[in-house]
Image 1 (tube, protein in one colour):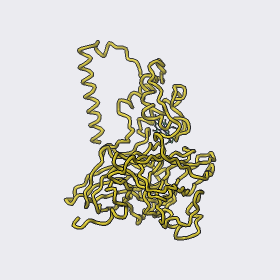
Image 2 (tube, helix red, strand yellow):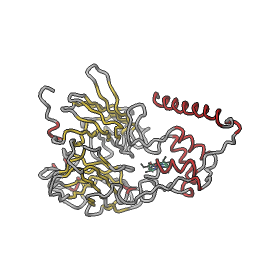
Image 3 (tube, protein in one colour):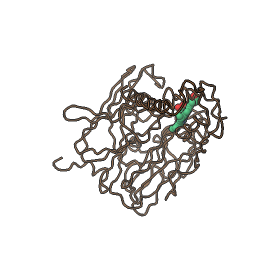
Image 4 (cartoon, helix red, strand yellow):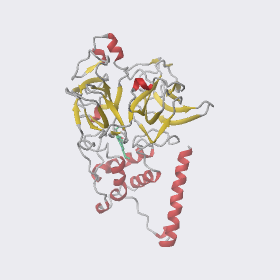
Length: 441
Ligand code: HEC
């Protein structure tokens, strides 16, 4: 709870400073009428900055929160969701790390929303409203160089589990490309739990006999080996999309590499919500203006050997790896399934001391990527550890079967233990060369 205390401390400091200001320049606090926060003046700016990215038409959230009329009926639920820190979705333990995409509300903002709801959600004066936020319905990437859509739509049923769906989209690039920014947009955002876009270079064996330009699932592949390997590839990731994902924009001098003739392989996990739908996900790309010094690759720490006993409520699985070369750590993205409870990334030093980079109180519905506020240089030889905890007990409301011994598998009723992480390495290096250890290191 250290950081929370620190945060309260900071708030207290601000209040004290304000108090001093008041004593000198204004009437004492007690004599001023206490007016509750209002929608237009106090709440709407928070919604614009922290909620509307998802809570507007055609985005992932179930209801828009753009106007007073839309928001008022939800006032109590909103107060509840922000107090419990369920909204905006962010599950990093605040004691560890700082992340540039942390959307969390501050304690004063949470207090403001709570006081507003408690006062009966007053509208206030529309003149106090901030300028409406301009949400583009199109791409956030300015002038994308390429927009590619999955050629054939995917039909999503109204109910039941949908197996991971793939669609292979040829890039037709005739030369190598460096990607500075990438963005994924499903056409039916409410059905997309997450999507991964892989870069399949020409000549790669992965899914070589699978159809191109139409949706398929692993179980429909005729080659048993290909069926097994559908979920395991050495192909690099271009990006991962989850509800609320913003565009992925790599820093100047860093970019993802797509060799000429590559295909993009979309792997999408659709979830059902009572309404059948059709989805045709697209991707927009912007090329780097000049070749970067560094290439961004996605690595992973995983442990396939997990075996979670029935009923275990805090089962720990660990994996450790040593970086073969220097790398700059950019972001972290844990992946587990329905029994996932907590996930942690650490640096383990030779003297046994541990530095925790991220701890996530895992929530299966939110596959978030945690982008480091400051990229972190990790020397060759750095030991990275990932630890995952699983709840296979009856108390886990998402647990499909507490009687089961759970193994690795791609269905959500099986488990996974993957700690993805993005690093920047010299531009001349690819994923395979990164793993060749330099002499003497
Ligand atoms: C990253 C996208 C995203 C952001 C940002 C976001 N929400 Fe949500 N919100 C959702 C989705 C999706 C759901 C429905 C699924 C769920 O409840 O987890 C939801 C559900 C809710 C609910 C619950 C509705 C119910 O049925 O009880 C409330 C209330 C809510 N959001 C308020 C907010 C507020 C207030 C903010 C900003 C402070 C916010 N959300 C930010 C995506 C988002």
